[in-house]
Image (cartoon, rainbow, N blue to C red; front, side, top):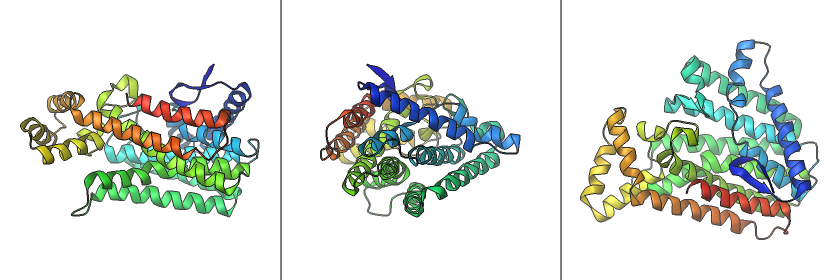
Length: 336
């Protein structure tokens, strides 16, 4: 049994393992090539997060989805580079919006060079992704454009908050479908599309990716509360400090409104206070880590991961399908 990709995914098929490893190596080379500029400073900034590492979750999904067609088709590696460049670009922008200081265990681009450089570097990565995409055909351009629209819409919806009368949890899950599910779904879609898989297979893998993407982000929400910076590679409670209500906080508020327990109401009041104060922030993290709302968020993560697993049912059994199933288990494991 060998380990490849994110979360220690184990691949028990030697041919699949070798192909996935080769594909991810080619993607890594493609990322470095795509982030080069004639201006050395731009190269340094654009490669900052590439060289910091990362799970390469989306390229891995491209490689696995391609196993349902021709896994050696020429568009597979470039499409994996496109989705990872797009993801990296969003991280530069997210860190500016969140005023994050750490990303992947290193100083964020905005902390190192300032907000303007970070935003413009994200734009540079989007431009390079578009350049590669143009060679993959109009259908690939359309798919990516639709995903990018959903991604931006999700970010705007998060910023605007739920409309009056809208359930905050439902609103938040819609946000995640746009911000995270869309690009993970496209990763699976590109792998299947570029491999020449049947349309039915493309649709199945796209649905799987959408659900897995939401589960992946929900696991991140849990980790942001439950882990330390060594585990997650970024400062715990970043969203909490910025007043962004992720699922554990929304489940807490839901429970407080339903039951009216004094301790829940007190914790909600603490979360509404100034959490840029380190002592308050630490206390809020401590209380949330022990609260049933965190357990509910974990159960929500499991539910989406199980939906992703169920979506795979129509696909033929084999090493690639087994690896995709195992990714569902790995996402759940991350959430504890």
